[in-house]
Length: 110
Image 1 (cartoon, rainbow, N blue to C red):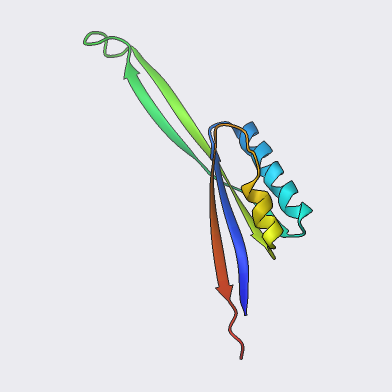
Image 2: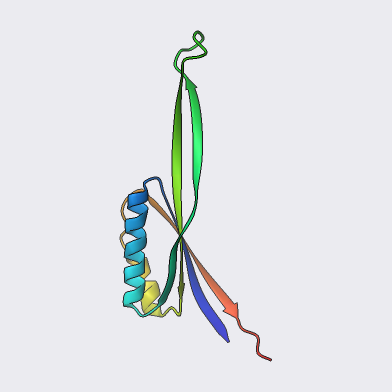
């Protein structure tokens, strides 16, 4: 017997936007009768950049910038064709990267 599961990874630079996107995904999945696990916050990736203010003088004068990438994980179990259709027609805010994987787990009987 096979059990179907959908795993959704969401990435964005703004935490408010990613929370709104996760809320929309959860609402649309629960509306179709699927069971939702999450959103699970994953570690935030922080990239730091140091830029010299001057071209060749004043090495001590620098600007530092950082870019934070927030991530969330949502698992949806007991999916129906309506769930998949609802997720494909979902409109998310701009600046949100979404990755959807279908996982099929086979249960072994004794």
